[in-house]
Length: 178
Image (cartoon, rainbow, N blue to C red; front, side, top):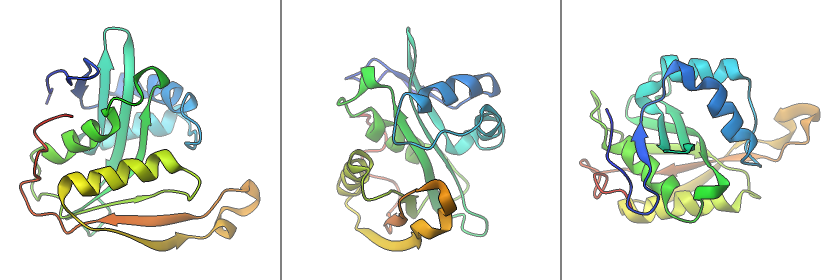
C-alpha cells in the first residue's frame, strides 16, 4: 500500500521493505533520545511487521518511520514502538501523519486501542501522542509499566504506558495526512 505525498513535507508513505533495515537504524541514530537497536532488529520489523510499520520518504531519502505491532492475544491494540522523524522534516506534522496512515490501513480487525511507552523526559513524543489522541477524539491515559530499575545498569528512565482509546472505527480523519 502506498499513500500519496503529505502536504507539508512532500513525503510518500509506504510500508518498509527488508532492504530498509540499515536506513531505519541510521534514521534512529539521528533521533535521540530514541533507543538505537541493531540493523538485524530493523530487518525483522520490516520482514515480519510491515503491516504495522510505515515509512515516509522524499526524493532525498528516508524522512521518518513509525514501527509497531499487535501484542499477542490483543489484536484490537496497535502498540507503537518507535516514531522517528529526521531533523530536516520536523515540525511539519509528519509523525502524526505516519500514525494516522498506519491507522487508516485495512486490517482484519481495526485498532480499538493505541499503546506506547514514552519516558517522562521525551517531551516531543508525549506531545505527539497527545495530538494523536486529540485528533482521534479519544482519551489518553498513563499507567506505570517499566520501572527504571528493570533496565539494569543502563541508567534508562522509566517507561510508562500511554494508552489512547477506545477508538471508534473508522478512525476520523485517518485518510487525511496533516
